[in-house]
Image (cartoon, rainbow over all chains, first blue to last red; front, side, top):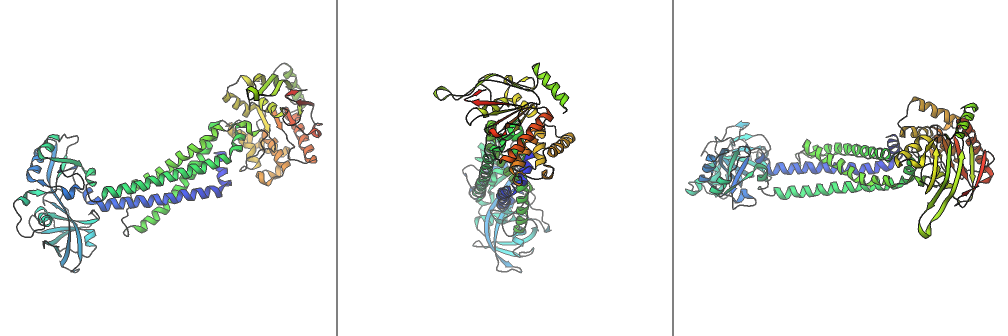
Length: 375
Length: 238
């Protein structure tokens, strides 16, 4: 460290330039993580909030199952009797448009991601104001995103086309969304009216259907038999995120961008330290001639690398956090400590890898070149 | 170091320890048709406190003599002894350690590190050896004083004149109290007056610290200060 820190101070202009690049990448890293978390929240926070471990979909539905899958009453009954299954119940999922027909914001268009469930189920919402769901009442419980449009408890919404009337009975004051749309909870009967687009009495068959079976499984439960018997397939909760519209595409795009960012930063850091090490060759030869073991010089160089990376990443992360906080509410953005720690850690880690490759050439410097060297 | 102890060390060298001894050293560079004999059966013995100058035109093998004596390069055959240790029998790692403990180099144009002050240049060899303590700092200040750089202790190389750099390089080489001091073309960047001063200083420090000093140079005008002068031609010493 004797030399590393003095070199940092002496060549501060060069190191500041490189540090600025790393810091800017760190800013971008924080913003991208925030955006990725924000997009994920907007896409699947509704699913994440549900107390379940798995969902069983119609095995014929293979992608975006929430819009393609239909399960029958026999299915969730079979599931609830199967070994290893703690709880199984019907879950309905539908995207719908509605208009405020009674209330302060009369005429306002509202998009709803409607989750249907039995009112006594643990899946049912616990409203922060108003009442909970009741079977067959036509009542819904809305979440913050819908309330932000001016919809209040007591308002009445009318679904487009089907003309199904929805009375807002309660509010969960949290941002809970699905497919970038605010979630509204409904009892199964109301959900079926919306799903099939039919007011009035529903046909017999429709009364026995839902989108998926919401499951709570014991750890390591083997459900192959019941899957086969019901022609359904149980996906873990995390896997179901991929079944929601756009989620897989969004998260893989963000992952790709982040991947490129880290690769670029590792290359930039590697390139800088390659040039720096080549430039230092006469000094390295001198150190070796003075009897410095290669390990001493490598340790010194790596200390410098880590000091620059940690410093620059810390500055960049701080700026990113400040910018990100200003973006919350204006864009799908949320700051999650683990995501930011991972992003900063990767930046430092991969930068170090890039630099290690560069400073490895220290081992190849011949101390003999210190003799007669003209500098 | 007093002259008495210098004499004592000189006497012990006669018994085979201390100082620098080259026994029948040959160094061949390259191989096959392009092979060049840089050192041709060279024998040399320098006692502690003795200042030997080796002169010769460029390409005569002077630099190879320093490289082999300082453990930077292994000779093709022959033995190099430093302070009673056979350098040629050591592993690369041990040779590196021997360089940092027993050998002081003064390089052409001094070779200082750009980011360090004069004082830090002196402390560096001891930091490398893990011996940077209060005694080392005191010694650094004494040596800076001895080479007349007290007013420059906090300056960096780019702020120094050529002569000052050379003196800082000499002081750095003496920091570890080396048994052997190897000096490579100390005057290549200096004018005549400064050259004479620099070599005079090397001679003084050699006698005072009891180092076995070998200086190679092509500048025949600066040999007066040396105790003995050898001439090198085509890898042979005479």
